[in-house]
Image (cartoon, rainbow, N blue to C red; front, side):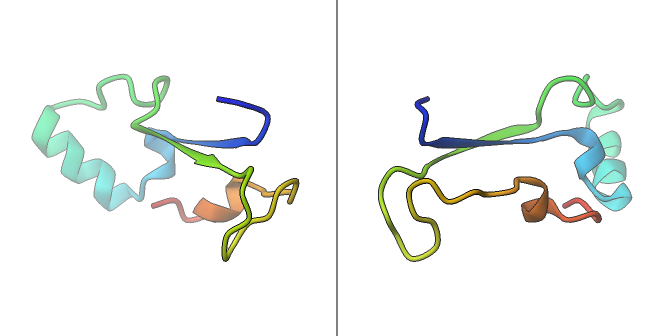
Length: 69
């Protein structure tokens, strides 16, 4: 990870209640995902592409919105 890397962590509370219930049926509990991320997405923002340019401020919460996944 470097100064141009954007890191997005997805936690249990980011999931919709429906997705939480699906995982509970599969695993029996939330497997500590309220403290440990379900997934970590890293984006290298050092090279211009069609959506992000170097140094552009990105608000991670805007990816998930208020509704979660």
